[in-house]
Amino acid sequence: MRKQFINGVWVDAKNGGVWDVLNPATEEIICSVPFGDDADCKLAIDAAQNLFKTWSVLSPWTRAEILKNAANIIRKNISDFARDMVMESGKPLSEASGELNVAANLFEWFAEEGKRSYGKVIPSSRTDKRMQVIYQPMGVIGVVTAWNFPAYNPARAWAAALAAGNTVVAKVSEYTPLTGMNLVVALVEAGIPAGVINLINGDASKIGNELLNNAFVKKISFTGSTRVGKILMDGASRTNTKLALELGGNAPVIIMDDVDVEQVAKSSVSTKFRNCGQVCVSPQRFYVHEKIFDQYLSAVVKHAEILKMGNGLDSETRLGPLINKNQQKGVLDIIEMAKMENNKILTGGDILEKGNFISPVVIEVINNDSEFINKEIFGPVLPLIKFSTLEEVIEKANDTPYGLAAYIWTNNINNAIYLSEKLEFGMIGINEWTPHGTEAPFGGWKQSGLGHESGSEGLFEYLEKKLISIGNL
Image (cartoon, rainbow, N blue to C red; front, side, top):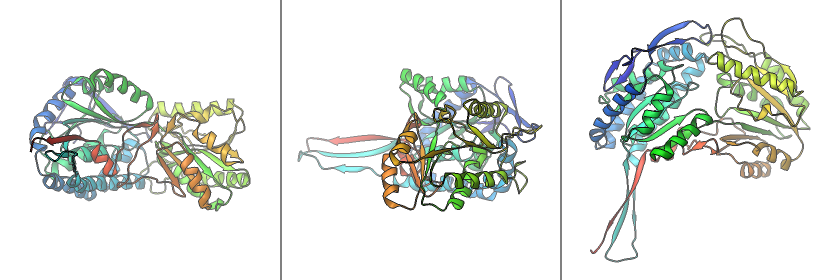
């Protein structure tokens, strides 16, 4: 289906608007989809509110069966769904398939976790009183997700909200709407009642305002930029709408002098250039100990230069295009900024005649006062910075308004513990690049967001806590 989904029906936008979905590798139009506004959003909210009364009182086991069925349907259709994702996002086919597997896992995880929204009994200081805490679904949840992970981002919020007994109004990115539509297809085939999940596509500002101002919407989950997150926070201050925000990052990597340089360099390149660097937890600022700096630099350049860039449908492609021309221009501007600040471009930065490609860039930071490394690059750019002491690198790593993820590579357990406890980030990876998982909380400090997705914490983000107290017994 290539339409909006409101109250169990695939529909066009009320205003008749359409949006051409482009393949970022070829710049060709894949298809056209509806492009609506606040009117579509209001219809979706009304449908979700009507169904909340019945969906919320179903047994968690009943809801779980539907979500587990959806997980299996996603797995059954991975080849077709992945192809759509590659066409609209540009990422390599292997990455698209992997992402859809994770999305399926999220639906299955929260299907089971919904059965475990345990409350508690509180021993009272009074003998004639009994107290208990229970958790109940909130109501209609607005979920606004970004284009960089068009299956993973929606799945972790939709699955948690639905498992908790809420209904959902989902606004997907207009750049990657097909994957979100495919997830809805899976939920519909799995038997989800009409109105429980609603998907809209359209004007972000108008839809966002409707989600903020509509009294039926109890919470908004947003994945995207810190700039837009602040706009939502300003709006929520007027309406008291609860927020879950997964925002930007500027992840430091600290590489000590006791590592296997070749192995870490190789994995650094494959991780940094995953999804063309368009990853919120992407390692961004590579702080390398001075004793191994030159060796590591040479190895990184070698591995970056052999990455195959091209169409994601080519099985040999390891680096696809950026999502659109604006994103490409933004990354090129940051590369130019690095040059203007007298840093050294070691390799990369080439663009192709067609598509939003930039060949993988490695930069040696010569100017310690460079501002480009403070940007959220969100592209295929790997800056290398030399350091000598732990205290020096801790100060530099923490010198950012972001606090999502950070990475440490060392074989010294004392350094690993010391650094992990000193770094001001919500997720720390020690000798690994994936300090997150379906079963673990995902969230940031500082300006990187509010709340957590995934894990048991992700379920409780979509539940209200209620104290029930009985007196005069």
